[in-house]
Length: 67
Length: 395
Image 1 (tube, rainbow over the protein chains, first blue to last red):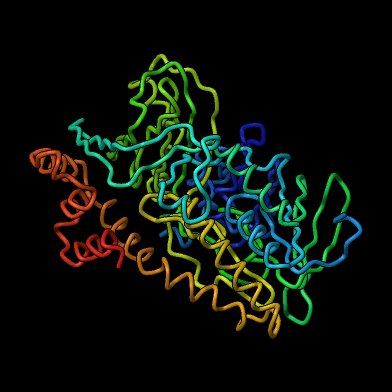
Image 2: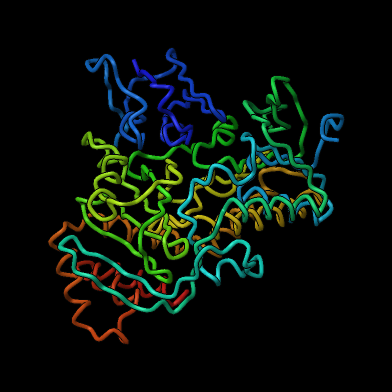
């Protein structure tokens, strides 16, 4: 499961732009993940410039469509 | 007032240069336009390195001194071994103050009759008979629904508008630059010079920039390819290391992060009742990441198409398609070329870059040009040399 360090987030939406299943929502000062839609591909984790997102169950990572 | 009005010709989601340009041109053409911006202010936060060419800006507006923090006529490229290549720019460039620039662009749209609302967050589309027919959202805690003949997604790299309409707009990891920038003061920079640092150690799969904003201030930032970000070192660590090494005395006035879409333009820029412009359509130059001019151009072309479509036949996909066609005609070929050059450049290792820098340094400065530099950089791939030549010849 992806965990968000909310107080670190700058709400830039970089993670939203790469999410293949459109499960992240970023508002002016609010970020949310719909965990039931998330496929744990971890692409958002990699792309975040300031390490706001992290995978807290590393074994679940699927890393599809990474290329 | 927008609150009472239930229906508009066009609703634009996002108040950056692409959205504001669309709104201005569409309103000028007699359409009723509502522009919804999710943030508190137009123009803030500035998620941009703020560079633009004089020629690019002039397509749309006479450069206004209010917008310009620095005028640039030289370029400096720093290779991994710190070999420096400098040359004059044929074309003048500017570092803008986007807070003022974006604000003015929105004002121009308002002067033409567009209605602009901030703190209005769009969280879904109204779909009727499989066609986009409006937006749903929230403004200061109150839900709203507004109908529109055309919804324009100008909602940036984080765009969801297209996806809600079924368009594939998410970027592959390798086509997203993970970016961070600090506007720093208390340093010395050359006021008229773009500085680029190219190395896997500074910005793998991207570059680091130092763009002056006056004599003692600069935007220092970088983008690293999402592909390299996989290695566990995030963009902010690269930037902190660079600033610590190069400008240890710097004071940080602003920190912004953001993604730079350096992929190809989205496959479909339009659907029934929907158009995508700017970063939402990946109109950025994939090599430089420069997005202000292409964003504004897409806004202009989309608005011209929207006006015509609403005059005859309505906002069907077929009628809106001429925007997509026009986009590819004007910038599309170069966009693809820049993408190929980018793909090739980012494969170079640091030794290659050092060799290229030394080759260029050996050329007398008056003969150095950006085109020669890129040609040297892609000389292993003759087909790309042609791409470089065509890009610079403007064919």
